[in-house]
Image (cartoon, rainbow, N blue to C red):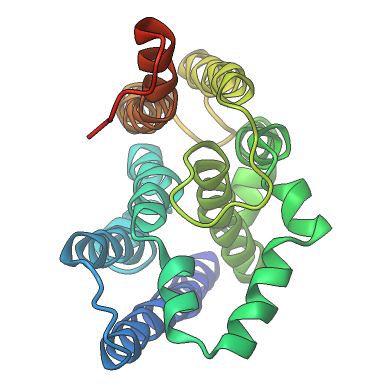
Length: 268
């Protein structure tokens, strides 16, 4: 009884804390749109919808029936992992929030933000190797140790881990597809090799969990959850790969045309 009440308290407090940053994100994004419009620089509906949809998936993952169910059902937890750590970050990266903020800020403040984007810290965490370690390495740590069980009994740990899942997923996506201003650009070949290795690490973990579910998780739930992780993860990863290949094609296609024709050819 006491343990059940403790779980309920952890659940409610964690939901309130985790909801807060996504609501703030929505408010800041819409304020930036309003300011940008006042400066005669309209923002696209497509990117706004991406931000709203991404935030909605993140909120569904941390608040409500799915978040409650995830405490006792590993497949529900894995659906949260897909929403919070993969789908929401992809949609929110496509929403280009940094570009929008730069439009809304004054020149002086925009320069400060630009300088921060050029910092050594951003250069390190935006490297695909570091981003992959933070994201995929974090998942290995969570599911192959007692961390998974412990986080359901400690509200601080639960909140920190879920924030890490989102932020690591966001940085991971950001490090492979360049939607925003990117001072520390890596080559397409480098990013392509790294994403293959990262996806292999994600897929191997899903297969490992199929046969070795985390402590306290039944084999049946482990099978369902690992299949969700494997196939759902592949679907989101495929979107990232398509965008990466499309950006690579757009950048190299003009050069190929020049080489073939032996002279400059206008490209649409």
